[in-house]
View 1 (cartoon, one colour):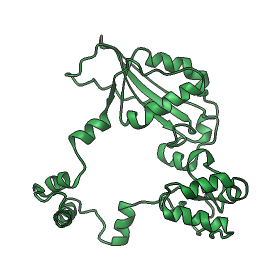
View 2: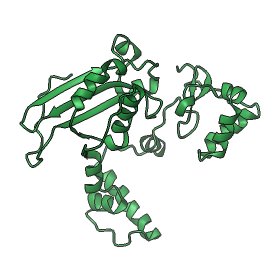
View 3: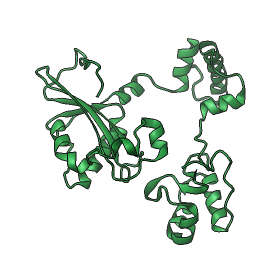
View 4: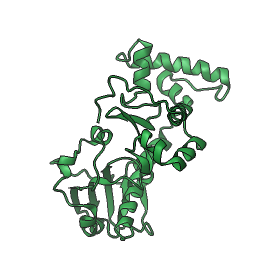
Length: 275
């Protein structure tokens, strides 16, 4: 919990029931298989009082290195923390009778919280709860399309929107505007590639569906997360068949196809020691 004062809600925002603004940190992004490691919230009451709480939670599974790099919470940090099951009643009390708010809560936090409550046989009902998502407001009010970029960086309207050549010429003008506005942008295309499409050095494919861990390629998604490709090829042919028939990127599938045929890539030097 921080020592920062609790900010007031916007004056124009009228409450007729409590509003809980919350955020979660977890072991990953999979709502079904990952677990919450931290929850923080501020509860606003219509009468003007507030409550601010935050908890660390022991997820009962190792926290992947990728997640630690994002939120900084390690296995050691949560070793003595209570589990979600142990805190479920307390956490439910903080949300009792309240509407919900946060940033991307519709896309992530609410689904993750609902799954955790279901796992301990304590349904978290959304009936009667209204939801305020700051991300949805941001994206609707500040569209991230080419026309918006041209207005922002160049002060121009995009008269030829959705005309292929018009879009190309508009993109070139946007790039010029960005280089004027951001003098710290690298000039080298290799550096710009890393800036625009940063990749974890442990990734074995471009999308990060496969990654290197201790010299082996492991899956980085779903219920097979952490399992080595070598073990999956040997012991889970149904999973491998499903993956190759599904809509995964071709470079991901090619690594799997090669593994099925007995060819496993050598780990790059930077990936070999990673856990």
